Length: 229
Image 1: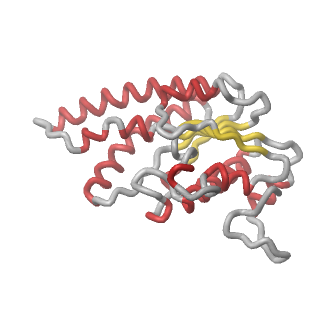
Image 2: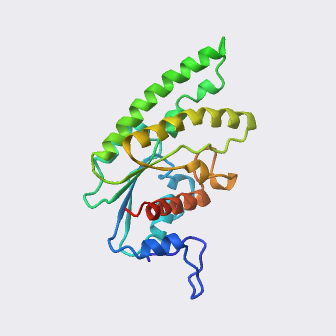
Image 3: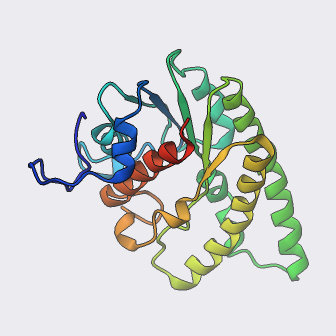
């Protein structure tokens, strides 16, 4: 292996997680490509060498590779341009995008409305546009004819409890779209709301910390082991 999971000591007694053992036994090297936004491209928010891509590379079996094409700040509409840079030897694609699409409409969480009907009409319009863009992003990835895993949007770590509640509820609608499109397109789904679950997993309200990045990298490898692809 190029390295052991962060936090493991390199000694004779080191225990390697079962999913890593399974990956080490794979005969064919893999090249994992990360697409999307700062959920994968979080280097600006953690110390050097502690980003998602760094954790992933450290955990990979020998001769496996990982390529970061995700760009901090990217939206679903910008995924197609990332897809054009996928290397010819890529074997697996992971897409995490949508958080910035949701963030661009965050004003609705505090917007005054005449009735709840106005809120639902606005949300329906936002989600309709997001679904179009997200479906186009997934379609662009699938044109590479490679296994694709898409990720839900995690809930974040907002300091205001009431704002966190409203944001989490709104994100459920975005995540419903992601889940439905993943089923429609036959993609695997990585539930990031079950991966980043505590304040320690966040460097700020919306970006993964060093600990969160390690959790995400581990979840990526667990998905690969379960898929057996």
